[in-house]
Image (cartoon, rainbow, N blue to C red; front, side):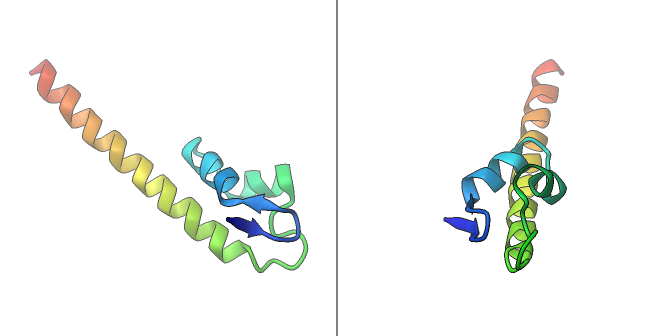
Length: 71
């Protein structure tokens, strides 16, 4: 799905940046996100937040598994 119509930034790009710990500032610098009309900004922020939350939860679970394996 296209997140930023003005710069043709897809949700895949936004999700990839979020998984790498990068956010909207990096997307602005690299792709010009929200540099024109700005209507994509709220959706991009929500998507980054969702992906980073899911990503951090997966790490939390794996840390618990590793800790219990070492005990």
